[in-house]
Image (cartoon, rainbow, N blue to C red; front, top):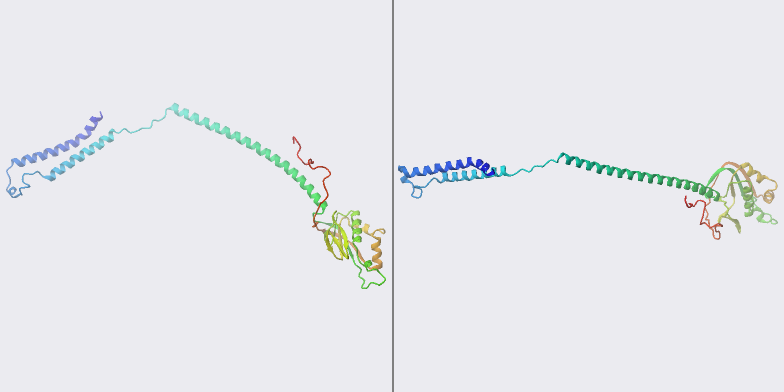
Length: 307
């Protein structure tokens, strides 16, 4: 069937080739039978009796071209064209079903993962909330302890006290010059009275008085918190101004100091203040011999088993 189909397409080209060849053959026979024209004798011997080369060449080219074109067309029509076979309806349905099942399985897995992550987030948030509560409690306790230790500056109503050496220009030869000076024990007596009257914070010349503060004298110099101070000595106390001033004005309080004020001119004054400022303790805290009375292996804030 394919051979006949090919011959049917080659037939026109073959017919054209045969026609050209027949014409060329007739022209050649006629040239031998017809008398030679007068100008033929004048032709060179090499061209007399030869066929027309141009005609022969044209016929040959036409035949070859026709055969080639026919072969190409025949090959084109004989080459099978691949066709994509469409899947059957059942096959398409099975593919869609499989794809849907895979997507549903992936969706279920993602939902499971989302649920687990939400549980983890909720647990983490609860832990953070509990930690924040513990940290808040610890921060409040630490702030309170720092406040009691004098590590935080304070302001509030209180009393301002000034102690200074005598303003006398000369000291009689019969008098002891130390009677005209302010001594460290007088400062300690004033501080102790202020603590007894309910003072919440005390400072002397901006040196915060804390539980470890020492007030002592080296020669004629008074040291507070290992810092050398010189008169006048300004004592600032925060507390109820009336209560603080009342304890200092009591007749039996600071008798020696008040006597020297009258006899030698030592200066001692006090006045209420609506607001005073006391700085934080700036000294070092050194503990050499202190240890905890209860082992620190267990504390009230430590997590308990099962919590």
